[in-house]
Length: 229
Image (cartoon, rainbow, N blue to C red; front, side):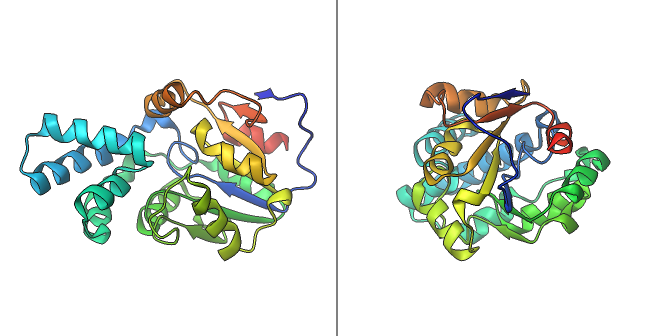
């Protein structure tokens, strides 16, 4: 664990906010590889192009718009529901139940929320497989955010308004450093969940230049980090 020396502890935190993918389960599960392939297949059929070209479009939209879905909505006016259903029809059995994480979450006092660029159904599927669904009060998904993804500030504003969150008494856990810029600006304590297996996050943050003091804490073991809190 690394900690920014200018940032204090977590005694003030009343609301614990967690990203879902590669945050609440290990990146080495490579769950997003399944989603990634299904996104490519969706784009290939939608635009009648081969998978190589579809992947190029997929990745360019992901980086430019925050999610591939947002890019498809902006550039091709697709209806989002079919896309979300298709790409999240995956096998989550590659994730092992995480008893240590469940125990650590159970010891945290206050509300616990999930804030994801994925769908509610995907979140329920993953949280159930990890064995931690019962710890979370609510899930805020891309539909709740009106399909505006992190790191757009508007998505965070909607989240705190709809879930009645005091940002100055909240902590946010994310696997992508650039997604911690808005919560830091809003007064949240920020934690980056880092993994060398998370190639997607590394690519995004390298391109975005996301180093800086907006990340208060860094950990490669979320369960141990929470247990220390």
